[in-house]
Length: 307
Image (cartoon, rainbow, N blue to C red; front, side):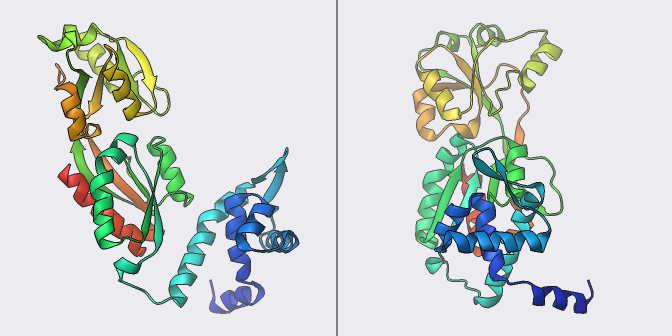
């Protein structure tokens, strides 16, 4: 864009509108946005109307008793937040003082991994950057987590992730493998083999409610066998609770088992070859310069390597 055009656009834009627009897009509610910004509702409504004129779009539309973002408004969420972060970085001197750095880092990962990393990660943060607040959000599958990164609803994602686009960063943290988990004293543990494994109902952990997985394909293709899935759960911790109270079996990632859990359950390798999988960490390119997020990411690498 020619410099003269850029200057012309900036002369017509009140940058304070971006602050109001950012909150309006987060809340999708004029009254709540006004309360967060300590503005009157009429002032917030006036700012919304000016934003509508600026972008040539309604931005917020009535949807029954609520308001919803238009597609244009959804597309503006990340760029507006990125623009505000850039302006903040421009007018506030950069700091490398981790001890005094106040920030919130939002991370999406499975509950069992949260339980595994929570203690050592928070201990290291307390020593190095005690003013950083960590917000752990539920795991919802790789696709949804990446969408939330794009929409700036998350800062970091730890999961099994596909290759990502140029606006994302992805690094491999570790190679994971599976273990079969059952309660102590389970009758399947004696002489454990494929027949005994398939004689009991299985637990599957899936945020989408999937009953079949790669194991079922392997059993059918190479062993001409099937298993009975007795229950599908959205949480590894819920799976461990049911395992402790029943004769169900589960094949779980090894890092979903804390050292304490390994003493509470019988843990055995699968009786057939089951391939493992890589675990990745991802973030959006807009946070490459975010000191708090990058510090947490570096600590996460170390904690995951130590698991």
